[in-house]
Image (cartoon, rainbow, N blue to C red):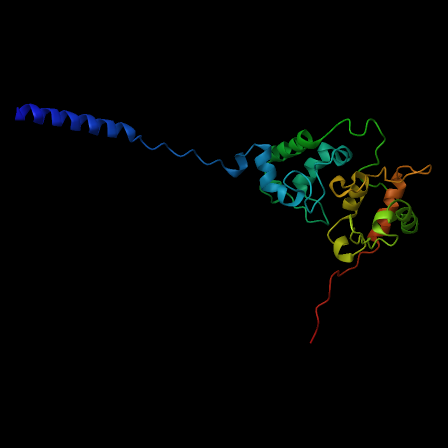
Length: 243
């Protein structure tokens, strides 16, 4: 009787040990880390390289909105790719191409440019309307620019460009030297043409109303940029106090 009980106990112990062993699965190997130059997902590339300045959803960042179909139509995919690769002179936009000292391959830059178009582009946004050129082909006239600014921009930015203080939609100064030191003439032109929809800023077709309402001409845009740019100074900002 004792031998039979001992045998039964041994069998139960063996089954218990066997069952416990089955529950301990061997550790799975960790997936190999993807090298930075092998990342090919648009969302990952955008969040890692663009979102900090252009916004997580392509807007509401410190730089121009990419989630703006008008801007994408004006700039075009080739310009977006070129700016990403080479950076933009006179601004804080750096070059991302490896050949220019950046961290992205040509393929990754192409993925970003194509991804921006796919995510936020709308080919029919302007319905065949004539669009001003992305870049100006001639210098502007400052005096004419001030007159055009008064006609098209003063209702929001003040006749002198220093902004308006309202309970809603207050605007800052466009002629502040500190601001102008951070934005290029091309940046100003792009903002005038494409607007900033999330902030209520209209595009070049303006928010004028009445019988005399019309879009800005290419010449007027060029002149306004010249007038704004004339407010730049060599050393913007508050000077240090000398003892």
